[in-house]
View 1: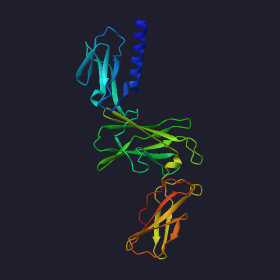
View 2 (view 1 turned 180 degrees about the vertical axis):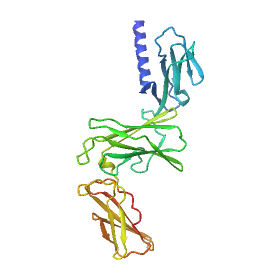
View 3 (view 1 turned 180 degrees about the horizontal axis):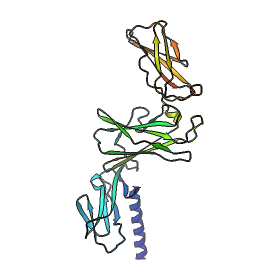
View 4 (view 1 turned 90 degrees about the vertical axis):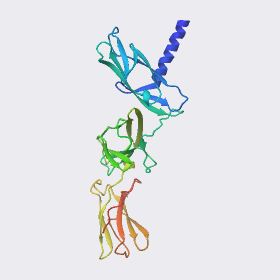
Length: 315
C-alpha cells in the first residue's frame, strides 16, 4: 500500500512540474508565475542530458555553482530565478546540456499580465495593430515599447490555418521621443483580392525582454484593416473646384474597388471647419479665402473600414 501511495504522489508531483512550465522551443521553457507575494515558487526538476550515467556533473546558473549530480531541483518565482541553468562535466568543465527559463507573469485567474508593450489609443487600445493599404493581401503590423527596453526581442507569425499561411519580414524599429514603434510587413499567401474572405487571419506576436515572456494576438479579415493612402489633390482657384486622384497604392480596377471621399475646408478667419462628402473625384467649393486650407481623405465605399489620413494641402 505504501508503495502505491508513493507512486501516486510521484505522479502528482510530476504533473505539477509539467503544469508549471511549457516548452517555447528546444531547451527554452516558459514558467507561468503568479505575480504576488503569497504564491510559492515553482519547483522544477532538471535532468542533465547525458547518456553516460557515471559521468560526474555539476550545475551552474550564470557563474554561480548551484548543485551537483544528474538532477537538480530549481525554484523559480521571480526574474532573478529565471535564465540559463547549465549542466557541465566535472572533469572537463564542458557544457553537457542546458535549460533556459523565461517568466510569464499571471494573475490569480491564470491570465497573463502584459506590461512590455504600450497600447495604441485606436483601435480600441490594441497592442498589435495591423493595417492594409489595399486588397493585395499585403499588410503592415506594428507595436510599441518604452525606449527603456533596448534588449527586447520579437517574433511575429500567423497561427496557421487551412487557407494559407502568412509570411512576415523582420521587425524594423522607429524610435521617437519616449517610445519605439516596430513594424513588420506581412503577406497572406495565395490571397485572391476578388474572392470573399471566410477565415480570419490570426497574428501572433511573442515578446521576450531579457527573461520576461509575453504574447499578443490579433484576429481580422483583410477588409477589416483596410486604410487607404491619402488621395492626391489640387485646387483650381478660377472656379473653386477641388480635384483628386485615387491613391497609387489602391487596388484596381477602381470600378471594382471604389472609394468614397471627404473634403475638408479649414477657414482661417472663421476658425471653423467644413466637410463635404462625395463619391466623385471633384467638388466645387463655395467661396473660400486665400488662406483657407483644403484637404481630402478616402475610404472603401462599400465597407466601413478606416478612413485614410488627410491628404497634403490641395493648394
